[in-house]
Image: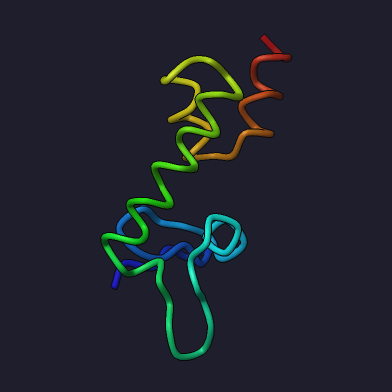
Length: 78
């Protein structure tokens, strides 16, 4: 039942748009972000996408936490 102040839910703390993008059903009755198996598969797909974007696991994990745009801006600023 974990829910962040920003609206992220579940074991992997998916925001609604990201969860929907990775195939999780979210409506007023069902929220698959709280399903441990389905959300883990979605998280693996998202992490694979982020790794392919940055070619680096540390950056992929950072992007999972704060978003790929923020990681790109931080790289550009440094």
